[in-house]
Amino acid sequence: MSLRSPRSRSFVLGIVAFFLSAAVWAEGGGRRIDDASGKLRDPPRDGVEGAPDFPRGTLLVELRDGDDSPVRGHAFDLEATDAHARPNGPRPALRTDAAGDARIDGLDAGSGYRIAVTEGPAVFTSAAFVMPEGVGFRVHLHIHPVVTAIDEARVAIEAGILAEVEDDRVQVRQVFVVHNLGRTAWYAGGIRIALPAGATELRSNPSGDRSITAVDSGANLRGTFPPGETAFEFGWDFPYAPGSSLAVTVGLPPNVAVANVVMQTGPGLSFTVDGFPAPTASRDGAGFRVLMAERAFRRDERPTSELVLRVTGLPSAGWARGVAAGLALVAASATAVWALAATARSRRRSSEEELEARAREQARELGAAHSRGEVDPARFEREKQRLIATLAAALARLESP
Image (tube, rainbow, N blue to C red; front, side, top):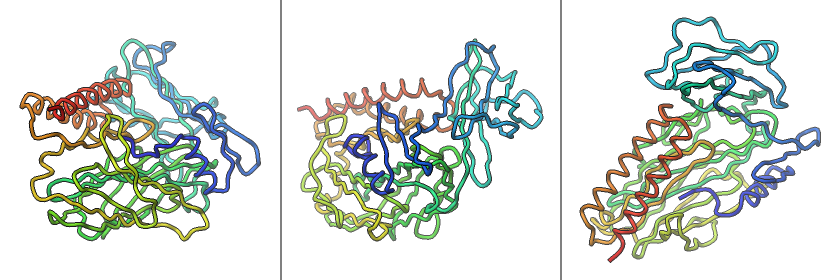
């Protein structure tokens, strides 16, 4: 289940543009942005790909600026992303040539790497990649001027919140898509996102130089958000007394333009969000029932730093053991992707339960391996889709009489 708005990307970009008082045109999945000069431009795209014109073990690094012009003589790092990668001995400082390129030879096929470029407090990173067999590899990475104050950047944030009810706790996952419509990167040097009193088990998956760490009564965000769209996510638990209702205050980062709250359905289970329209019934990608509430914000409103989620009809002890925990929470390369939990009836066949458990464990292992750079993006996507299909089929059979 995606936590992003169920509306079209053009609609969401329209909300973001209105929030920033900017003009944005969505065309075929891309974007054109009016910058300070009043000119339209396409956001630059980073990329990693095989290079058949280079021999096995050779990496070509291309550093470019926001206008896609070469960045000459700039230092960068080649970082190993798995325990098997090695730079094959000491290397001199890596730096681009007069064309903005650098060639690295002698890398091990099958080993994982990424490129990292430091620019002031910010770090621009490529996607993790695995050196292929038989051919070389190419990395195309952009670097940008950096600002540290969000008011100096053209940034608006799309927030998604998923609540899953367990036997004695609500598991909350928050995903944020940072829309940077300017020509500068925003470096978040310690943005505090409040957590409710009593929250436990803070979880996060670092990406690039972006990280979430626990601080007093909250989570601390650090990292670089270049022009374009960048997602980050984290999760936490909130214990509750069975058979009760609860109110949870969910913190938000600054400049939230649109927020979407999703919760699985169950007997008598419902929620409201203060200041939001009433939630509506919907279905996730696997066809399971959910409740969803969404709201857009105006820039001239008082800054929104938190939402109050009120959950009613919480189950008695033991109810949630009959609820499937849902598809594994797995992050895709360009956007954050989730599969939502669903109710499985009590008449379960043990073989289907075993299949479900194996698929969940494989999905967790796949996500961890991808985070460590041990699985290349193409294989990750293939395996993810296979596991989603396997688990969806198992849950569907478990729900059948």
